[in-house]
Length: 257
Image 1 (cartoon, rainbow, N blue to C red):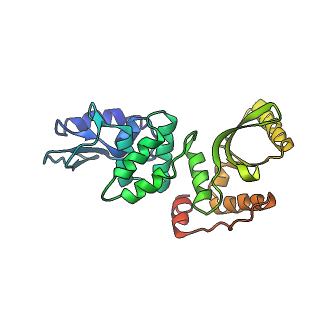
Image 2 (cartoon, helix red, strand yellow):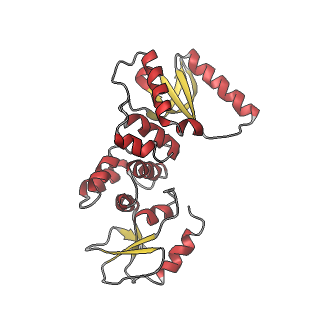
Image 3 (tube, helix red, strand yellow):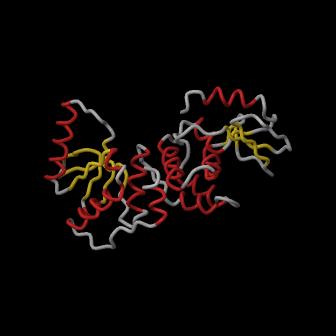
């Protein structure tokens, strides 16, 4: 959360009408969802009131979203955030709300089905891509980097074992082809953790799984990464289409690097 977000929202209240509800990305941030860079405080009102306060955006609406204590409910806030977020960011926000236990997948699907006007298509598409058991934004980005390129969708945070022994939980698994994708965001790991990871990778290999470790640097070279994952899938029996790097894919994953 933006360290001064609560202060900015409190100060904004002095310039907002009494019925104002904090909505969209502002509400998501207050629920603890990371939506990236600092953004204006967004609020909605039924009145004709206006504000010229710097960093505050007040919108007049016909009906206020479901809310409590002047804060839009999580599912409604997620739907409204389509005004500021792109597809990948909106899916990541939905994944985070699910992980925090603030919404259920049916909650997001229901609010998406009711959405109208600008952004409704984006919301519906995002609702179809939100998944449970996602631990981080990089995991969301990695999953969508593959899906939007046309490759098989991996399952999220799966516990794997061999025989009657549990080996451990993996970030992403392309189950049909036994391919594990592990996101490693740490720049410096202690020797003990490094050795534990190597032992675990060996155990997965013994159980006929293949592992690709994805670092921040690799995620910054998404096309190269997708091709590497595709090549490993082919080695393990994948005969589907090769990845396609559409203009949409480029916009989401290469223009933001």
